[in-house]
Length: 147
Image 1 (tube, rainbow, N blue to C red):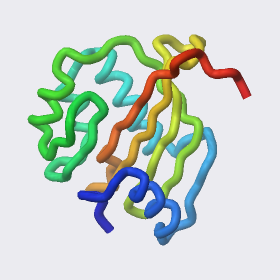
Image 2 (image 1 turned 90 degrees about the horizontal axis):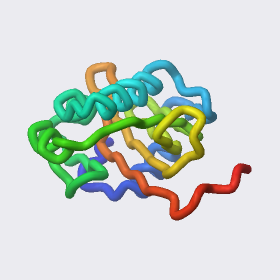
Image 3 (image 1 turned 45 degrees about the horizontal axis):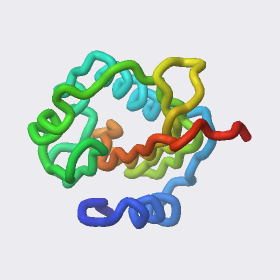
Image 4 (image 1 turned 180 degrees about the vertical axis):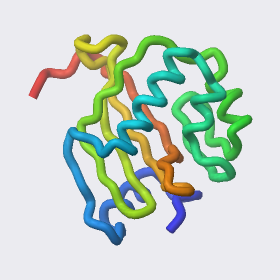
């Protein structure tokens, strides 16, 4: 099952409905998904568009937040060139299938700061490693009320 050409909402439904392995959910991420968030944070904070682009699937249509869909790491590097800064990514939920996964979370500038926005990462497994095919985020208009 491929995500290329499928809208993100459909892709997320496919992940949860069609996964052959049982989905896992909750705030504690499996280590291979946590690695995606850790590597993303490190590349973002270093303003390293090459390392950031390496977290995305190559040769697939990917949907980064900062620009229109692209299908190459060179395109992603150009998209994210000059972007970055302090970031604290916090997982709120996730789902894992055999070949696809997602992470839903919030972000802030520093650990302990109130969340300033939310994100969804859609991932595919390539050669045993999770890679991003969609990176969507949205700042909050105002700080959310804790639940």
